[in-house]
Structure formats: structure tokens, C-alpha cells
Image (cartoon, rainbow, N blue to C red; front, side, top):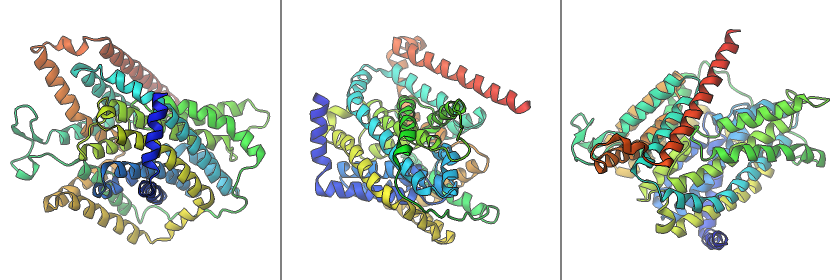
Length: 501
């Protein structure tokens, strides 16, 4: 009951005219960026992050909620209409969603995706409202050793699961950790990895890295392939823009199963919602094989409904893990953590006590954003494809300009623009060789936490490393990590054997 009363207070803050305006603006901007070719929800958050710093914290994060969920809706729109998912989490939606669009059922596919995203996200928001305070109370029992174990869990799980190559995942993590060490040592206050450059004494800004890797790196990647990749023609969508009763009955169980699969993955650092979306799709495909008339491969509505619900359910509970534990389980959540830190806020158990108005207004804004997005996307989803009529040079030129303006506005330092360009090239090289970006972002964000927790734990125990495994929480985290690694290794070995055969 206490959570409900606090949520009502959050709605009182989120539904003020100005904050409601920022939710709508965030939803529109997030969806607009999400539907652009080659971009996605994480790119939307990265590009629009500097814009929020002109607002007071509550308004900024309410707008961010709209951007966050709006980008996910945009990912699905591109996946269905253009067979071009804005993010890896929308790949599973292309299999049946694009087939529906090719068969002239694009409006029904878009409606299925919008409703699935709404139901999955709404269910996750309800779970977060009741679960996040309990998670925060549990996290209050964490000491330095527990936080170090949590960071190691995120490092190893993310770098080993995301992408096809463990080596590439670990390499991306090492790059992120390397960037995180630049600046002054937090304990001894000595400079390190600065190469004697005074501008690096304060470290590298998370915003600069985020915009460079996710936005500018993508621009360089698109520019390098402009003469290689054929142009994609937008799918013409006709017919009714709603679901029939039979289609509702068909999609309903898939929405429910997808939501159930996606909810737990929001607190498991596997790099985002890629894993649960594929699991949800695979489950529906297995069920379909047992039916008298299998529909998968022909535009099965359940093959679209389940991944959409799973992806947004994972995203919603990921925000709960971020708020309550301070644990980003995906690249987008890592950017959100960077936004909190820019405002001098540290997500975790103390956030609920130090900034309750902000936390509960933000949780309330999840519900508001999902309703706004449903209103926007059900009747107007097809209109977002019109953005593809913008010539590519103007589109990506504009993105580059906003990257530079956003980073320069934070510090007014020309050096940050050079840094933006350099790290953007790193992002391009990583894309060129299929190195995953999520481990890099996780390494940058959680690197300082892991380092400070390790050193404080050792200082408090006179250098006794046994303190790192001295509680049941650390044993539990390392045990779960071991299980995750075993399952991942077995899956990769099976895939390799299947490929050899």
C-alpha cells in the first residue's frame, strides 16, 4: 500500500502540464530517432542526452522516460516496415513482422507491435513499482565486496554473452575499463593514463564517450558503406489499422508468454533484451510446430507479438534494477546511469531516500509514456517511415552536427570535440569488426565502481582477499555467474558443432 500511495504522489508530479509536455516531447523525439535507418533506442538516448541537461532533474528524467520507450517503439517500426531493426533487440520482430508487411498487413503488424510493447512495458512498470523498493532495501545490505561481485557479474556475463565471440566481448570490456581509468586516481589523487594532457586529468566524460561510440561511430559506419549497401524501399502499407477479434485471440497468449519471459531478464546483465526476444520467438515457433497448420514463415502474428512484449518487459524491469541496485544491464541503461551521475545522483538504495520525489515521478512517467506512445503509434506509426525520404547525406550530416553541438555545450572545450572524433573512430572500428558495444559501455560506467569497491574492501581487511567472498551474497552472485558461463559455453559449443555439420 505504501508503494501505491507513493506512486500516486509520483503521478501528481508527472501529470503537471509542463512535465506532461516533456513526456510527449520525449516520446516524439525518441520515436523519431528510433525509426531512422541505422539508429535505434540507444542512439536516441545518446543523441538526446545533452538536451536534458538544461532541465531540472525531475523534468529531465521524465523526458528521458519518453525517449527511452519511444526509441523502442521506433526500433519495431523500422524492423517491420523496412526489415531494418534499429537495435539488436528488434531483430526477432523482423522474421514474422516484415513478412506481414510484405503481405499487405503492415498496419496489423504495427498494431501488434505497439500493443505488445505497451502490455510488456506496462506489466514491467507494475512489477518495478512493487519490486524496486524491496530491491533497494536488499541492496542496502551490500558492502564493498558485494558491489565488487556485482560489477564482476556484469562484466563477465555481458562480455561473454553479447555477440558471437567471447574474445571480442572481452576486448570491448577492456577498452571500456581502459577509458574509465583515465584521469586522477580516486584514492591517491595521482594522474594516470593522461599522457600528460591537462584536459584529461578529470577523466573522459561519459556523455562524450556515449555520443561518440553510439552516434558518431554509426555515422562513420554508414558513410563507409554508402556505395555498398543497396537502398531499401519503404513498404507500402494498406488495409485496416486495427486487429480483428481473431487476431486478438491469436496474439493474446503470445503477449502473455513474451512478457513472462522478458520480466526476469531486466535484472540479469546479458546485454539487453536480445536474449529474451529470441527466447520468446523460439518458444512461439516450437508451439507453432505442433499446430495442424503451422504459420511461422508466412507472417505469424504470434511470432511478432511475443518478442515485442518480451523486449519491452525487459526494458521496464531493467530500469528497476538501475534505480534500486545502480546496475545497468544494457548499453542504454548505462547511458541512463551516466545521466543520473551528471546530475550528481547515484542510483541505488539511497536514491529512494535522498530523491523520492524524482524516483516516484519517474516511475509514474513510465505509465504515462507508454499510454502516450500507444496513442501516437497506433494511428500514426506508418507516418514515421516518411522520415526515410530525407536524403541520407542531410540526415547523417544533421546527426553529426548535433553530436558536436551536444558535447561542446557541456564543457565549451574544443578538446572534447577532438576526443569525440577520436572515440567516434574507435566506435566505427568496433562496428567494422563486429565488436559488441554493450561491454564497452558497461566497462566505462561500472569500472570506477568495481575499482573503488575492490580497493576499499582490501583496505578495510588489511589486504585479505578472502573478504571478497566472505558473505552469502557474494557466493550467490559468483554461483549464478558460473551457471551463466556454463550455459553460454554449452550453447556456443552446440552452435559450433551444428555449423560444422
